[in-house]
Image (tube, rainbow, N blue to C red; front, side):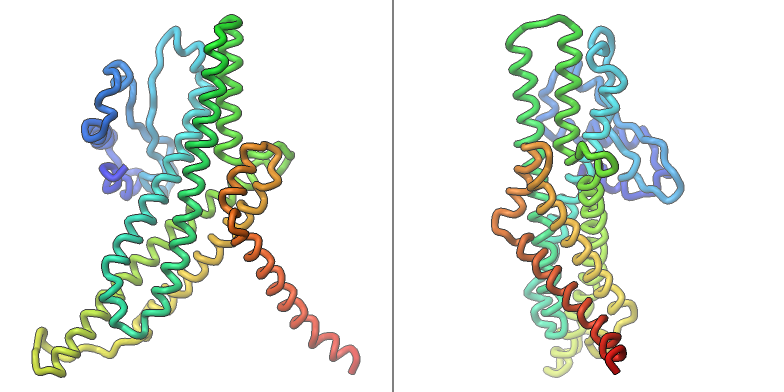
Amino acid sequence: METLSPHLAKPANNLQRHKLTSSLETAIRATNAQFDPVDVLRRLDARMLEFTHGEIGWDVFTLEYKVDSPVDTVLDPEAMRTYLRIFSHLWRMKRVDIALCNSWMKITSESKAFARVPGLRADWHQIRIAMSEMIFFIRQLQSYTHLVVIEGCWKELQEFLKKKEGDLDSLIQAHRAYLERMETRAMLLRSKHGKREQYLSDVKECFDRALNFVEGVDSFYNHSLNAAAKLDAERDEYRGVYTREGRTTPIGHNDEGLPRTLRRLREFSMDFSERACRVAIGTQTHEDPKCKVLGQMLAFSDYYANKRQRLREEEAAQTALSIAPSSVMTRA
């Protein structure tokens, strides 16, 4: 993924498939995947989905595994489409995880420099709190998906294969059931009509808000570096050491665009937290017992339960304040 990142950040219409394939081959040689059977590796290929205007490489990239007869009897086109949906979900999850971790390492490496700028300490404190919540949510979601969903479903399929019972139709049916269980649990799909993708929609929005948050943090990071450099220059000037020409500008929150960046960071953080709270609380009553495990993993400390209670109290207080003036006017 890190090898492909520079290419996937470009607009989708500027991507070249041969470069993606070359990057895939480089990534395989750099990992233990190079020791997989040659026949398996030669069937793996990078391709792009159909795209619309405005989409980037991350939105359209996927891996394709080519199968031939007689394997395609079991891995039919419908099964391959299901695998594609699952891969896209896992791929996006991993992308968010890497983006958050890289951003976290970057800001922590400069934490001492930012601490010297008094006007930024509170903002960075809130950013670290929000980012730690995002990392926790994504890491728990990854652990649930890999350990509970994929490993669990694969174990169930292996148990069927070990029995060596039934015919080809039984094998096809068992594989379809395996895919259905894996897709339902990995994407938290529900059986209720009209609410099938209720939690999946929130998870996808959490992914988007996390990526938006990282972009905002990068912008604030650049501002903080400039502010720290200006502060160092002012201190050097006070001591009679001139490190640059000209007088530096005052440090503060008057830089153009900074208030908007901080406001958007707060909005992304709040939206992420609200949606993560819905997933954490909602999955505890999911129809599938395996999906309930995610709710338990996310809410083991009652953080989201307490958060939802606080949100309800705040909403009730705001409602009371909005009703109070009208009731006073009515009595008058």
